[in-house]
Image (cartoon, rainbow, N blue to C red; front, side, top):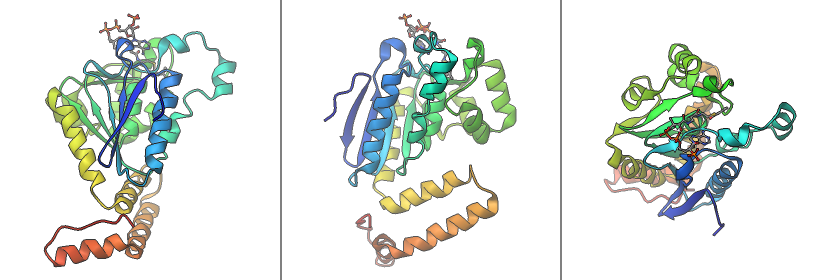
Length: 258
Ligand SMILES: CC(C)=CC(=O)SCCNC(=O)CCNC(=O)[C@H](O)C(C)(C)COP(=O)(O)OP(=O)(O)OC[C@H]1O[C@@H](n2cnc3c(N)ncnc32)[C@H](O)[C@@H]1OP(=O)(O)O
């Protein structure tokens, strides 16, 4: 098992878990943490025995943003040369579904990391925001794009231009999170969701994710055609035959993930 300094990585059945573990800095996302999270997630994605990834924060913060102290002394040449934050995009290229449990602050990069997940389960204490404007900058991990696609221009402009935080209830109302639960339920419910997904046919779950994710990038017509082609392709797999036979035979399916 690889040693990590800013995260704890474990597996529970078919779920790969990544726990952000810089509580003293409210899980501020420094370069080390970014590399550790993305490497662990990429490894889970490549593991045939893993069907979903669960990302957890701590009680006070999912993550209070990119590490301001680390960025404070950067300049344009170093930011541009290193393509600062680009590595996070590798997380969005993963094929297995990602579930995030958010309690407390999910600000700036923390909100952007949560939005890289496919499903966000929020505890009642969750506070989402894109406060980069207060630091004299703008979102840099996809916030201006993913937030707008999730919640629309009106709310995205409001959050990005004012930097205001929104609570869990508003986040659910505007479509930023999938569910809100009492704080003590956030991790267990997110884990249940991740387990439920991991127990499905893996190729079907991956293609379902691919189809929904494509709607962010394609025209309606292109997306519908992609969905239909993916749907057709599932008929090449044993799991389609098994799923439909199991239904007809009134039993649970036994997926082989093939
Ligand atoms: C720039 C781009 C593209 C992306 C970004 O994500 S920029 C960062 C956006 N996030 C923020 O601006 C939030 C910054 N944090 C806060 O405003 C506050 O910490 C708080 C409101 C989240 C919580 O306030 P509280 O008074 O409860 O706690 P603090 O004493 O302020 O924080 C505890 C501890 O954590 C350090 N911390 C918090 N956030 C960050 C951060 N984003 N980067 C680095 N360090 C952070 C904070 O400095 C303090 O540590 P020390 O006691 O050692 O100073």
